[in-house]
Image (tube, rainbow, N blue to C red; front, side, top):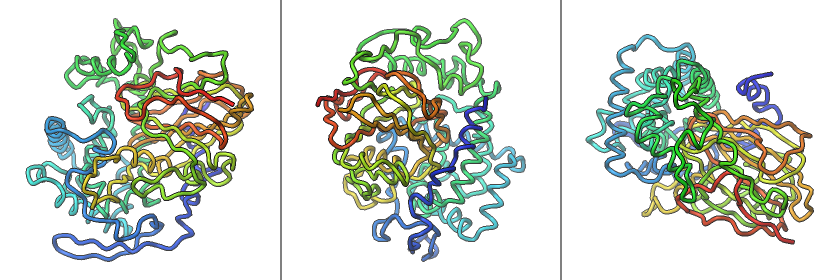
Length: 483
């Protein structure tokens, strides 16, 4: 049987090539203008047509991709991140000439392509200007140092460090991502193709026995006091007080709790009866597909909409690809967010026949932050805007289930890989019948998001309160459908 990476490669872009779906090869190119401390550039970047030039401004120093994903960082969070990155830079610079082959390929791409070279050069110049003065000497200075840092990242498992737990690349690119050049670089198809190769190499390491080095009780280990507290408090929804080994299948007496790799730990499974299926015999009750916090609810969704504009909504063709079912137009979309401490397997929200499964390749580090430079209140709604943006731009997996209940009809599940999470593994096949609560797939590595999509005319209500701080239990009640 093929590994999850092999299956992903086999289906990557086979039926729904992401960049063609977005129409980026067919629409006019965009002229960007930006200014650094030394020069003013005006350039055209290929396949970039999403934003009017007037909406791209110099990045606010504190409105970053980290903020949009995790909420705004307090001073303690910033100090922890700065200390971590400073140590990482020192370690990375100790072996400047020992790049992994995939990063030598990345270096060749940057240095042999004038457009990409310009973007990566100017990205770090702009990031330096955006970073607070006290941070500047502790940030990545140029693309050469970026490659050395990535070389360290992809040969190590991620430590558990505050809000950066599981997503070290996000911390590395904190000030570079929301710059104009950073935005252009990280929606570039060639850059994303290269990032996929880098992330695949890292994924191989995270599935190896070498990656258990962080599955320890140290202060930055995933079984350290603070990490265990966070893991158990995240899973103990509804006031339960289970220990980690009571929640998850593991062996607390074995080295590394019995997990053979970091990925095995990340995709850990709940013990039986920890997450019962909501009303298993009542098909009007929709089960929660992912252990997640509710982020937003979209009604009367459009076939296509301006998903990149602040306050806008979902765009079905960009989420699901060409040929998506017309019955979803005018329907309802529920979206939730999973952080690095949550359970990362997906479960069927309804019972029915799996009629379609596919993966859409997308961006890996693209951020919505570059769009809202002039917003006087950038934190208000920014996380929701970012989630909507990712539903159309990030790598994602689609599963369509035809239910037996005519009041529900076809239901769509969208698994969305965020930032470092390049692998969305589908574990069901077309034609297979699933029962509500059955496993249908999983995420690998980091934080992620998901959507459940209902057809027009389906009267689905009773969703959890949007913005609640506690996860909704996977397989628990998500909503109810009435005629």
